[in-house]
Image (tube, rainbow over all chains, first blue to last red; front, side):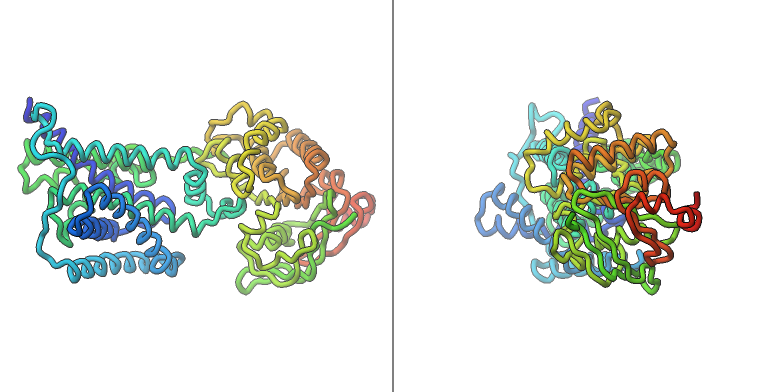
Length: 290
Length: 238
């Protein structure tokens, strides 16, 4: 039983990474109906920025916060320079731009930092946490950091005028303009926010998967799966979906098919969910009256 | 009375299709002007053109004496022009109160918002009963009330209303027109009202324009237009 709970809890820890990435994907999807394939690479690049600052001698948490701020700014810049010009183009054009962005960021990271995996420090002590039974301190810290981040994002959207304006711009751009919201600016802010949220996921993942330009490839898939499962239009559903995928991945790996096939089992379950509930577990179908 | 809004030789097009071929109209400070006409005459486009929304325009639009044509919609809103678009423009996914708060988004004085919520709920008690209901689940009449209430949250100097009677039961239309009259008097908001329901609109307005395929066919005091037998039959259909 202890092993089982260990699998569940460390699944939750990994799931936190997927939840962060899923949330980042959903923030952009809700406002533009595009899936940002470069989200993982943006997170990877943010992690390299944090790594550079840590190498330069900055304390971990200072580097962490600075990486968030830089990622936010980079996200805004990417929206303004790369995404804005193709905003109204056919979806295939947008997809190609996103894939191009993925490859470009990946190459820039490889060219600048090299392809050799690097160790990335964890801010949490080594060894076990709370009698050491179920979770390592880093895994417990991951869950904690993810929950704090989710709470911050939730509070921002729910309780601030700017968060309300961003939600409004995402669902009704024309009406938003008529109440004076600068919709383009909200889209750029959304990209910045998504980049910062993704950066958290990248920095939490790096101590486990090691830092290299391809570190986010698998994680992006899981994040995407989490988002789809929870409901790609619902941030909280996506986050829960991310956690669920993490747990399912671990349990499938430990008890069902072994580590080689655990990805397949996780995806089989996801497809099952989507067949039964196409909008995802928590995807709201909008109720309207005409 | 001085003119709050003046439109001169306004041309509007969607891509290659010209919809307004140069119209002149004005709304007096404190007045209610009705813009009437059949489907497709260009009433909705006129309102959009004034706000520079979704349509290319040429010609002059002056608000309180200053040119506003060509300025971004978001800036025009900040001057105190509240546009209730056709289809009501409700934020369906948000709550009633969130919709209303968004109405005040462009205002600089954030402090007055709570007081204004109470004031606006005063006009629409039906909304006050359900501040946390998802706006998409409101009835059509309630959504129309919400749209007008949202516009009021701006403390507008001018309200552009696009067919507030659309799809509503006659009794409800009377309610809403009564509220519009009260708003015009108490809030000192001038109104440009686009309507297909000519009889109701003419009873409320002090001045009226009749639009026919992109041109002003007729203008005058609302009472005169309502009286003129021939005009009624030809343009207003009753």
